Length: 277
Image (cartoon, rainbow, N blue to C red; front, side, top):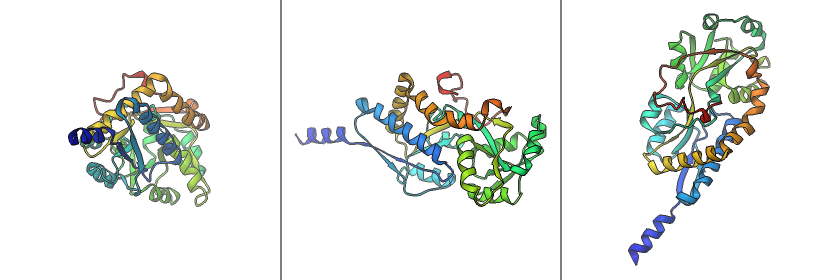
């Protein structure tokens, strides 16, 4: 009887997810991520049982976050732009969180320089302009390999101060990040604006990563996401959170400069059309 009671208790134990809310993520992205992960876990309840979703109490830069994710104690779930290191050390769920919209990068600039960017017609012309990026960020190496002049900073806030001081000319961000950060930093930097004429496209999906070697948590979340894809809610949540932003930045009217990403894993599901915007 004791063995049976122990088994029943184990069967009812909730799967515990502790999601990181990284300091570089915008309120827009956080809101979409929370809705998506909650919907996926709800969709998995019939098969996997109860769950608990907590928000990590500490905000950590990417390198520190990776170390904590490996332990799986302060955080064991994070939505991040993928990198070789994260895919090797953690468990990636290779379904783009945001249908790959984060592969499109638009730039924050000093609005007084808009004409400079409007005149850009080729990648070589764009490479001649300096850009800012985080030392720990997965795309920084890609920019360098593509021949861009990269000025590195430690934090998003620090990079905004560097942009305001003219240390570099543009700061590529995901669409949601660009809109959020323009609003957040404009009071201190009134000429901060979202550049209007171009976007970079770099294959660089944002995935959910599971830490602490917790295979069950990864399998459960992937199952839930597949349920959402099957019943249309994956697309529905994407359009609910991103359509207005895509229109606001005029993405469809911009010149798109495409960069190769030699650091992208061959396991990236580029052929799965349902996953991509």
